[in-house]
Structures are given as C-alpha cells and as structure tokens.
Length: 255
Ligand SMILES: Cc1cc2nc3c(=O)[nH]c(=O)nc-3n(C[C@H](O)[C@H](O)[C@H](O)COP(=O)(O)OP(=O)(O)OC[C@H]3O[C@@H](n4cnc5c(N)ncnc54)[C@H](O)[C@@H]3O)c2cc1C
Image (cartoon, rainbow, N blue to C red; front, side, top):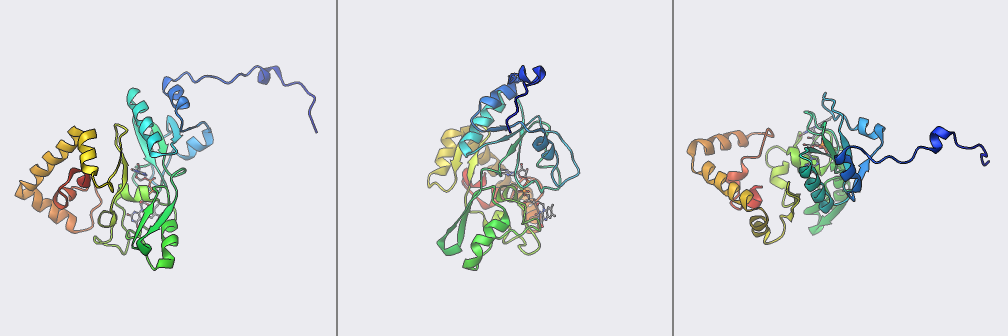
C-alpha cells in the first residue's frame, strides 16, 4: 500500500552530506568501497585478540591496483593503514584506529595448477576453501593452522602461519612459490615474472639496494648468520623472516 503521508520536514530536508574530513572525502571519491555502515565498522574493531580499536574508516578495494591507489591517498594524508582478512590473528595484527582495509571480501578464488602440485590462491580465500579444491587431487596446503575454516591465505602468508603438522618444512615460508605484492608506494609486482627482480630494481631502487646491503651485512657477519640459523631451525614466526637473507640471493626473493 502506498503511503500518502508527506515526509516529515526533518527527513525531507536532509540532503546527503559531504564528509567534513578531507581523508573521508578523498576515500569517497576513490573507486574502491568506503564502508559507511557503523555496524560493520564496529564489527571490524576487534580481531581474535583482546584489543579493541575503532577504525577511522573501513575500506574494501576490488583489486591490487585499487589497493595501490589507496596507499597513495593515505600517504598524501599521512595516515596509516592495516590490512585485514579473516581477522583470526591473536595479537591485534588485524585492528587499527586508522584505516582498516578489508582484503578478504573481493579477493577470493582458487586455481589448481600442475594436477594439484601447485595452486594459485587469491589472498581472501580461506585455507579450508583451498584444501577443498585440492582434495580431489589428493593434495593439501602445507600450513595447517587450527583456524583453517576462517583464516585466509593473505593472513597465513603475512603471519607465516603453521599448525600442528607442518613443522618447519611445510610451513608458509617453505611452500610459498611467488606472490603478487603491492608495495607501500603503490607499485604492483608479480614475483613469478621472470624479470621480477629487474622490475623491483627499476621501480624501487632504494628498497632493492637496501635489501642487498642488509644481505651483505648478515652474510658477512658469522655471529648474525649463526643466530639466524639457530633461531630458524626451530618453529619461529616472530618478527620478520630474516632467514630469507641467508636462503635467497635476489632482493625480490628476499622481499
Ligand atoms: C582458534 C584459532 C586457532 C589458531 N591456530 C593457529 C595455528 O594453529 N597456527 C598458527 O600459526 N596460527 C593460528 N592462529 C592464528 C591465526 O589464525 C593465523 O595467524 C591466521 O593465519 C591469520 O589469518 P587471517 O586471514 O585471519 O589474517 P588476519 O588476522 O586478518 O591478518 C593477519 C595479518 O596478516 C595481514 N594480512 C592479511 N591479509 C593480507 C594480505 N592480503 N596481504 C598482506 N598482509 C595481509 C594483516 O595485516 C595482519 O597483520 C589461530 C587463531 C585462532 C583464532
């Protein structure tokens, strides 16, 4: 039934408001999604840790290129961001009071390669989804975190997650072949490209040279090398994967 009642003046006169915050104005013009639902923003204020941080904005890019352009906007506003995927992290890695970027919603999909020996997984897919696709081939992913029904490949790779069975041989670090990276400058790089290291050197010369310099420092110091070898012989997911300085030679592989 159609209502014939006029709108209350209070509602009728409420025109859409331009956000006052210049950051929100720029995010509103960005092609990705700026989530304006209070409910969704509050739901994203915690992960599986005990921290509670209300994000200033919650956004959802649709692609790596959109994430790149988002990084450039945030740099202009001198604002930090945190990527969030499954939100099962236990130490507050997936919460922020700055800009929270949902990289799960629009990044799903699993493609089996080489009869299941390899698999291409978009970072928002869960471990369980990837394993379900691999099951008919008698294969599964190496890392097996107990949160597999909810955690995603993006979070698993960033956290170098492992699990009860994979040990240090089948963890994320050992089983990851390549990835598409979005660097803080917005540069998008596929490390599977045969000339990925050259692309990194051309796009990010300081980063490339810095990684080489650090590698020389680590490999040239017997005590550092011994410490890294000792710490990474056992299960170790704390901090950066410094073992890459010993295991790899090309900066793009170290990165
Ligand atoms: C019940 C339970 C059991 C668990 N069991 C285990 C276990 O057995 N082994 C284990 O190692 N961990 C375990 N965890 C911890 C957690 O589940 C894992 O670390 C998981 O891999 C996190 O994935 P996520 O998708 O939830 O990532 P999130 O929590 O959303 O994010 C984790 C980190 O990854 C970053 N990130 C997310 N997506 C991307 C992306 N696309 N690109 C770059 N960075 C990204 C985030 O910024 C954040 O720093 C458990 C957690 C719970 C709640």
